[in-house]
Image (tube, rainbow, N blue to C red):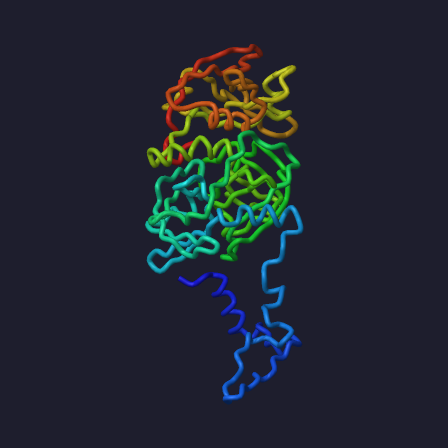
Length: 377
């Protein structure tokens, strides 16, 4: 296949946007003639350009960001799908000696995706495993990735808000694009359009993310992957799947092709001032209110759901449900925190202590988690 960058150049030339050498102010003289009447070999440039001009060669790295980009770009690949006449694109990055990581939604319709490596071109790949609920997938290059490409390490601990980061990807099929920003939020819940679930422990960034960046790495200036780009959801708002989530899910995708998520089986909302007042929570100022307990879920019989409603400041507010304030040794302030605990600290079949406020009293219930059903919360 053609290098997508070459295709873009051809398009520009075809639309009359390319400029001739003469227009650029650099005329080429006629070649000299030798004694035997043959043209003198020429580089195609005037005498002062016997070698290609410096601006056609890659300039030396004179900034930290240039060094960050050059150290990582070869480990990032463009992903292309060509199925039944339909094409799609995204990004992947080298996870270890054999595998690449991308988004599940990038390869959802793919049987035989292709990956493009800088300086190495297109390679055929296969899908090793996918996980809908974390939006992660693993690819393997059919004939092996290029030998000169190294893996990008996953960050061992979450960096603080304000950490400078960069995204390398394939937005609008512009391969190897590089954008920068900072981590602008952590422990975010990533909402997936058209799905009845969300992804826990997301990383928020203000680095520019566009269609085609999906699946690419969000890296620190030390070259560590702090997130797998998942979505851009507005100006200066983008999200990535955390390194911690990636580190839990990807080994299972490599080993088994799937990953099982824990499931509590409730519908809930964050505690609000109205819920505090309606439920007489007193000193409790945060938590997760249990609006509904699914009858066939693991919390059935252990947790209490809404029994009635009341009106507070003109709004209808649920009452009677438990307010979750702790899971094992984690304090639970919000639904984002609850989701992060389930995603990062538990597995199906594990029994956890759920601390709730019920009728003004603190109560601890045991719940044995189950496997999250397909498409379930």
